[in-house]
Length: 126
Image (cartoon, rainbow, N blue to C red; front, top):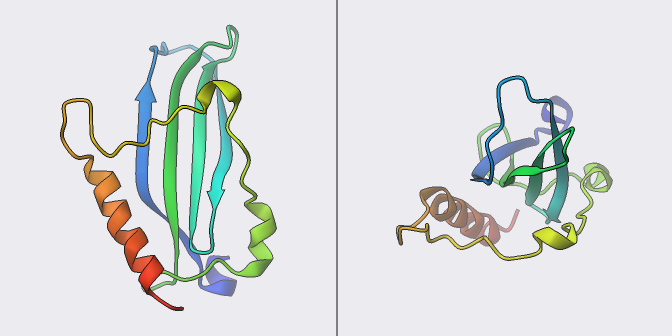
């Protein structure tokens, strides 16, 4: 994708919510899904579970912007769209934790940067 189509999937935002600790020798199961697929952005959701107990240890999310080799936003080539279908969240994860304001009242820097990038993407007609 990078060489043939000059399309790179750049991480613009990352978030993780730790719920319970994992130990050094624990075997973990990591589930990943596409939660949002738009023309120039992709959002992935993550769950980290203890493999033996199934206990949820952490959840996370990353937002990615499709860019060319110069770092300028561009549309994801159509031939890759089928590889990134959005899938709904499991029932127990459908609550909204996407607030850009942290628990101590401060603004989440990664969310602010990602919003600025997303605004630039929306304004660029390419």
